[in-house]
Each structure stands twice: as C-alpha cells, then as structure tokens.
Length: 114
Image 1 (spheres, helix red, strand yellow):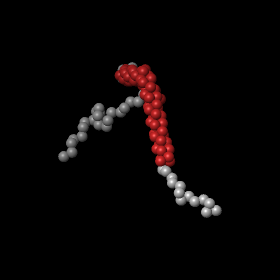
Image 2 (image 1 turned 180 degrees about the horizontal axis):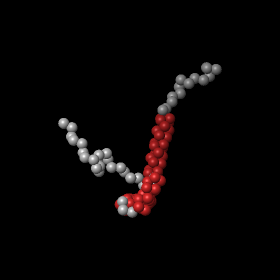
Image 3 (image 1 turned 30 degrees about the horizontal axis):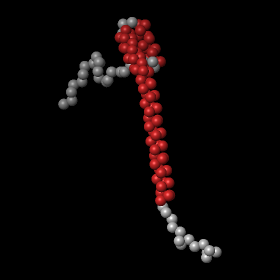
Image 4 (image 1 turned 180 degrees about the vertical axis):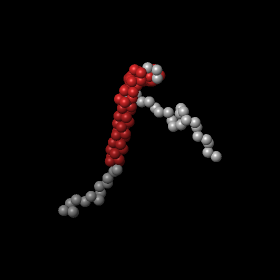
C-alpha cells in the first residue's frame, strides 16, 4: 500500500495559512477598534446628556448648604431652630464638623515646650 502512495513530490505552501491568519487578526483588531469607538461615543453622548442634571444637582447642593448654614446661625438665637438642628443631626440629615482640637476653647493655651 505504501508503494501506491508516494508523497515525496508534494510541496506545501505556507502562503494560504498565513494569509488566513493575518487577515483574521486584522479583521479581529478592526472589530475591536470599532466596538471600542462606538462604546466611547455612546458614553460621551450619555455624559453630555447628564450635564444639565449634574448642574442642577450642584445648584441644589449649594442652596442646601446655604440653608443649613443659615439654620445653624439662627439656632444660636432661636430655641425652635435649635431643636430642628438637634433632630436633624440625630437623624443624620445634616453633619456638623467639629472644630479641630485646641481651637475655639475657653482654656488658656499651654506654654510652649522648651
């Protein structure tokens, strides 16, 4: 049986497998680039659409902070405002940042170390 089939005169070319491999890699890289660019443009459109909402939220935050500062200033003079501040602080609606240690105290400062 080996006498009938002699493959010594067959030559193989690497052109077609390499061409298929290189073209597949180029097509895959092109698809990845296209998908990434379309995703980037979609994110950009979403961000541009969200800008008015972000600006509105920043405006609300600024007005809320001004309202809370005014309420804190009023609470020093008005017992009803003071009660509102206490309840809002306990509920976690507002947060009062404590002064750093050693500031705004009635005690005399310590003498510097020698």
